Length: 231
Image (tube, rainbow, N blue to C red; front, side):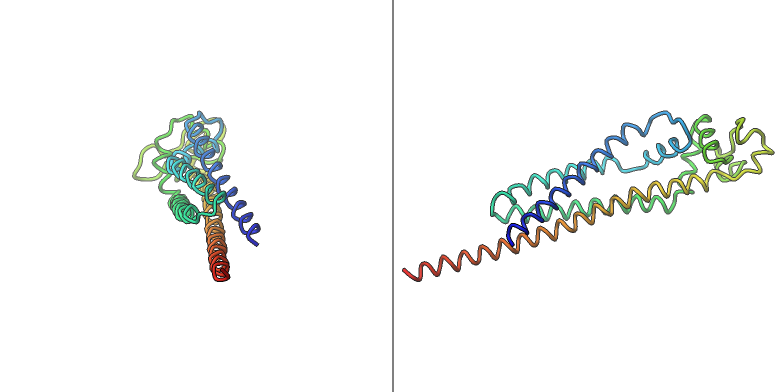
């Protein structure tokens, strides 16, 4: 029974550190590609979304995961329970950190249409044309851009928006960009919530191993008292 509990704990610990590796790799890779010159509209929209991601927080969380993993190793090797307890507390902090990041990304999807408008307006003409061509749209809210903010009107191009009259017949880019962004971010924050689930399972495994070791220690004390009583 003890070996099975320890094996389950080790598997959860492995999944936990793999989660940290994935988080660190994703954050570092995204930091390196978020400012690349886009080749199409989806890549342009993706890079603009990446620039809103809490990548520094992701790296910090990954570092905390690695520190927690290091703390758990003495708990696996030695019978001391203090390392398991400390690892459990640190895992709880990691879970809360991941949950906050996931909630932040989820909140982004609730306001994508309005929040992306100033980002779209600040882009260069070639980037706007890429998004118009890829998403088959003209302007942001409509071909004239909508009231209250400059830079949202359509940009003339030969493919989708060759003239004001043609642009007026096309939809604005807000709807397709928002749909693309929501699906894209949904996948990311779903992964973050999945990581929280792994953290929760790891915490349960920690509690089970702590209970098993406490029982073994109690039985050792009972055995030692029994042997003393015989003498």
